Length: 273
Image (cartoon, rainbow, N blue to C red; front, side, top):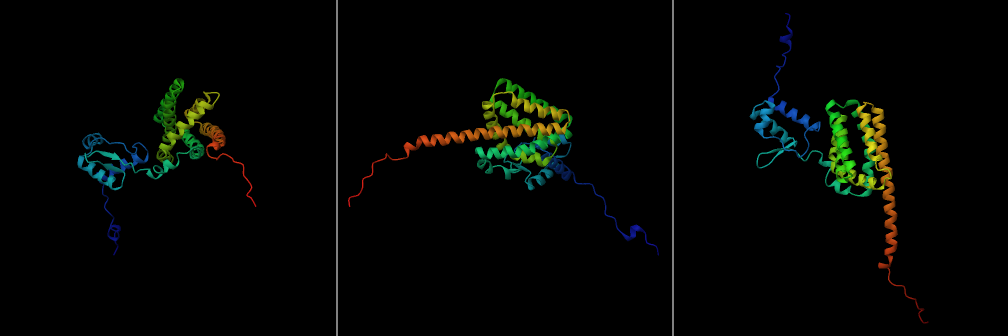
């Protein structure tokens, strides 16, 4: 007797994915790509359900899944947030240990490698929207530089570099640098302030950023990588020179302060025999 294929093997039924699972998957992807960042508050359940065109019970079930995965959190008022725990392994208390001049040099060394790669990827992969964001960040940096506003320079500098990571479309790079954002912002501020005060040609720092920007806009990964590497190595060398000068000054001050630590010298008398 000939057996049919159906009789020999029972095929599993194909069931559509639950809507809640699909919603949860959508939010996971948004978090992974950095579109939703740690600590951000989401819209209300009602507003989100309307925007996503899904039922509130399905949305609620999806959020229960994400809360269980520590990707979302809720407060007593029922508001929903992207979890602050995301990327925390490279944040506090490690950040406090990195708040030294030597550790900031280590951050610059890390950035000299990673930023060059990110700039190259951005030149190859940046979407039109990514390029528009980079153009806005570059324009804001130029304005801040023209005003010689160091605080604003630091802010726009950090945002420009983080925008490059977003445009690289490498989620590991993006989340690594997002997790180090506190260190990066502190590092950029202190580094930029020192470099701005010590450079003879004040415009050279801005010109280095412009070269990175141009390489990305031209979709020239080699030019973008070289410009980013030059920018970071120049910053690293200058920062090292500043640190060395500070160490020499501290040593000189310690020598001058010896009078506050050493007792007045008295003539020693020989003990009588």
